[in-house]
Amino acid sequence: MPEQPDGPRPHRVHVLAFDGVRLLDVAAPLEVFATAARYTGGRYTVRVCTPDGRDATTSTGLRIAADLPAADVMGHTDTLVVPGHAELVTFAERPDLVELVAQLAGGAGRVAAVCTGAFALAAAGLLRGRRATTHWEHAAKLARLHPDTTVTADAIYVQDGPVLTSAGVTAGIDVCLALVEQDHGPDIARRVARDLVVFLQRPGGQSQFSAASRTPATGHPVLRPLLDAIVADPAADHRLANLAGRAAVSPRHLTRLFTRQIGATPAAYVETIRLEAARMLLERGASVTDAAERSGLGSDETLRRVFARHLGTTPSAYAARFRTTRTEANDLDRSGV
View 1 (tube, one colour):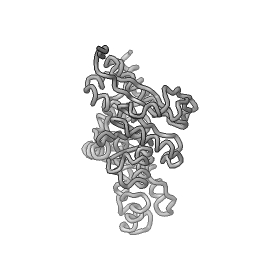
View 2: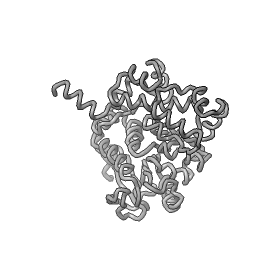
View 3: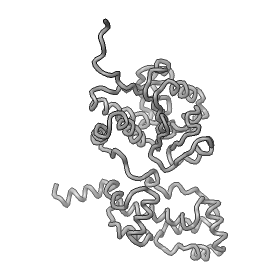
View 4: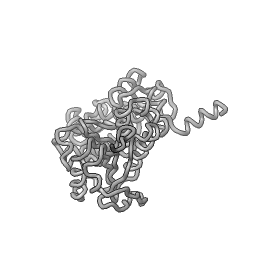
């Protein structure tokens, strides 16, 4: 009789690499699953495949060695990871990659995209009728190009059945940790997270990473001075009547301009900027009360409500988890360590 294997077959993970791929989009999944393999006695095999089996040059210029050509992966992968391209966001210029993703996914147990890899999945038809996310900068484009996909712009990662998509670059760690937890439970996933010095589940969504920078640019002669003034002094009086008076237009007309040009009401925009100011204050070591006052949100309770609504976390939890290196160094100095 043939010799029987000692245990279950290792879970086969293949990360697709190609010229122009973002380095961390590839490296993050490799690191998570390789670390998980150490903690599970080799329950994962992790390999890099490329379209032709040749090395791939990443967006940084670093070359990644291929373990095998994609043709050898067909029907032999349990988890396929599709990273993003540094420049070709929609993958429209690479129909060959889109077709390859479709073929590889057809024989995979599950598929995970990192960052703009979601566009490759969408172009291959894998996100049709599903929920998905991608880097916040490109979420609106994903929704526009693929209206059959429900795009959740603020999520760090989204799972819809066997298809997972994630936000920009380092979110590849989050989505792969989620897969490890599904496979081997929270204890193993937590050990991997500790090894990588990351959170098993980071608080909040993509909004916490520069909400103000996602405001559409506009040179409108009425709006531009107001937007600049709000950003320059978030705590000033930016009530609708005050803003309209400064712009010499009616409150109703100003609201229409904001909605048309910015995609938000004046009050919503002001709140977004004040949240951004409060976030930066907390990162720099300010107390919750001080951050609330100096950002213009006013009270601790208002700050808590705004954080819960936009970031899904509390100001104190955010401050503890997103403290700057400089603040941590000061804490060490004070402790005498």
